[in-house]
Image (tube, rainbow, N blue to C red):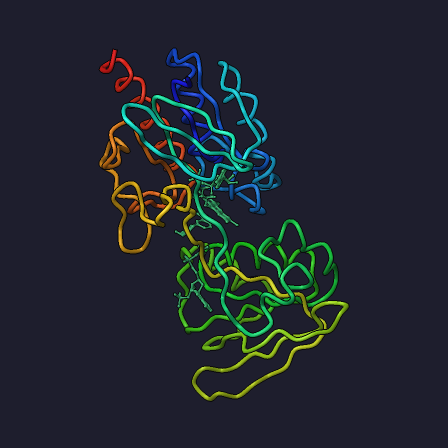
Length: 313
Ligand code: FAD
Ligand code: NAP
């Protein structure tokens, strides 16, 4: 029986593991289906985490030191995908991919979010073959070539800036004429001479053949005029969808109270509506979607887990 099962090894889950084990819990396992680190490992930069200020380092570099520190006090890692969580009586049963189960007194769910699809024609067909959601991973394939970026938030403009240092030109296609990104991020992109803005526009279709993407059709939403762009990679940054599937039961109903948009309702202690079940990071309601706040949530959830276990004994 685990003292605590942590599902998801991004900033929230890793920090929860650090606090739970350093706080004295002996039997804590982090179930992470990939390499721990979370979404930020896909970022080309991080400049708003206090204490870390190095513009040459990527999100992957940034998370590197977290591994060492968070596993230093006895946190175990199982590279496993969790399928579901059930509370039967006092304890939780965690079902892993493949069907094995593990019992735990408490659970912290920190499964975060994944990139959202924009749903234009050809997006799925060319995903991974010219359509990408990771500039660090795929930007180099377009060295000295033009690329198109879709979106107008922080991710789109930060990644457009990263791509502008590798690619010949970056065309940022955004459906409105004002951006959602933070003002300094907009300002920096606007000052870069090889970033060009294609506003009031969307991707109508990504086109190509068996070799992959060859170009995109861009539609101006005001005039409906279509412009074709050849020989471009397409990077889609239109937001994230929370990963809440582990909280569904066999009838597809959520085991705890959720918001209409699929985030978990928690209080300031990261407690859900189910005693012993905590949620931290981007998955919770009103998450600021920042590494620093995900880490903060993780620490709060772990401290609450320690109190909960003490109260039960
Ligand atoms: P995540 O980081 O999403 O981690 C969740 C983890 O859970 C993942 O590793 C996933 O593999 C795992 N998981 C999911 N489902 C399962 C399952 N069923 N079983 C096992 N494991 C599972 N924030 C900033 O503060 N500054 C920035 O500069 C910044 N830049 C960003 C750039 C990009 C490109 C992106 C995408 C995000 C950026 N963010 C930034 C936001 C930040 O990365 C997130 O807010 C933060 O990572 C959320 O942490 P989390 O632990 O809640 O979830
Ligand atoms: P976001 O803030 O939700 O922005 C998504 C962008 O994509 C918006 O500009 C949106 O347009 C556009 N969009 C959405 N659906 C679209 C579609 N179907 N077709 C075309 N365009 C579409 O997402 P994000 O940029 O990934 O950021 C997610 C969260 O992480 C935010 O809270 C953000 O602040 C945070 N984050 C922070 C940092 C940082 O702190 N440095 C970096 C990255 C991310 P509209 O504007 O018209 O809605």
